[in-house]
Length: 67
Image (cartoon, rainbow, N blue to C red; front, side, top):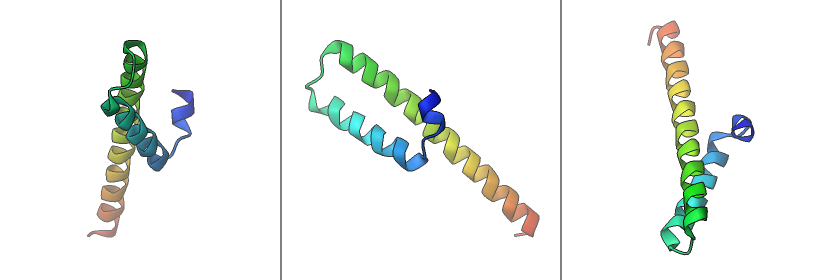
């Protein structure tokens, strides 16, 4: 997860899209599928965390401005 800590949201989404495409192709063996699903879950969690933080930051800014 160390590498993901320095990832941007856009990089994580691009990697997630790659994984989904590979998974949907049906060309993966079981071992690769399990590894890819684990990585995909980590990326989803990472993206969700980034979005929640951005939402919190925007709300704070708007509250500070009285909007």
